Image 1 (spheres, rainbow, N blue to C red):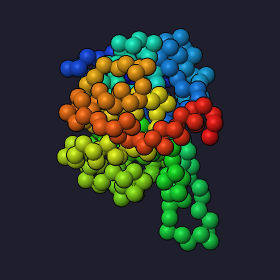
Image 2: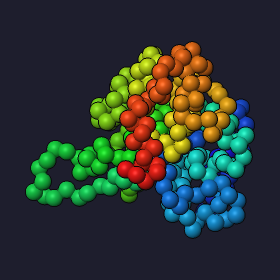
Image 3: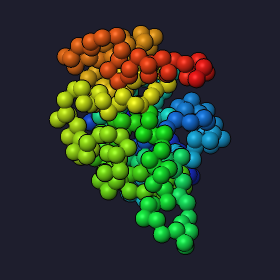
Image 4: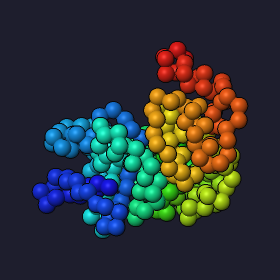
Length: 269
């Protein structure tokens, strides 16, 4: 596992640690957008010119405020040009989030509006944007919500909005995940079909990732076979769980949803 840290000159460095030697660290959860910093950008010193560098700075600075020297960001701590490393990372991802001392959720689409003096509404100025955040629609962020014990939510400006405990009811209303499943890794107490239901409205860029992003939620490790398609990926996942897939649609989508997703990818909807 590679971890980031700020050097004395303010630049960021990467250090690789093996399982028994991993120090305490913070971890970033976010939605991938244009201009993310990659492993290659860090290696060739072009990271500061990328739009996503601000998120890395935010994570590192917040970690430092929490007295954590090291932090992890998925965009640049994994060399995705290596299929072997990518496979190991995806199979380890849930555990990495689970072992993080702090998880910071950066919500780029949740700004904090200044409340007008005449506005007596009890709603937080950011709550409607929070409810509509695309972070709650992505496949990979489900495990990032469930795995860590400490999950803190931050606005676009880097201001804290609350944590998994203080926002528990709101998160339940948005995601459909029971409040008890949000606490202390109690999600494993829920049956297979209910856990699958938490992912049914979530999307991933690649169809197979809808299944691969659930590995940790079911405590499963499997080889990645990009190109096998969403259905076969779910078929393998169900078989590994011991709950064979029935029918011809994945357990988290209906045929209509699959058609809509395909049309969207083709730019036809």
